[in-house]
Image (cartoon, rainbow, N blue to C red):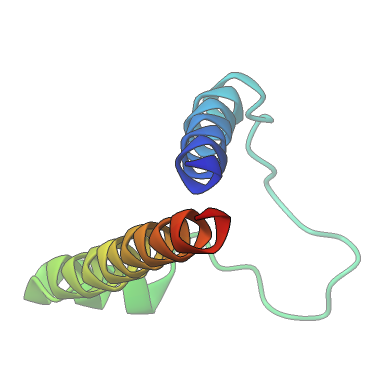
Length: 89
């Protein structure tokens, strides 16, 4: 059951950090002085993915992978718990 506590703690920290990020946002910079690259105000790849509707596919794939890893960890924790019970007996 330690895995559930660790997983809950990680989820809590992730959600907390996501909420703090909005509070600590810095004002928008107009120009980067130390970079030799041309300043771009928008990211073309993200705009193209958003226009084509493919950004949702990326989000779904990432969520599927994340849920798969969580499900694998839960089943692994259950198996280890069963083995620990058998070892104690």
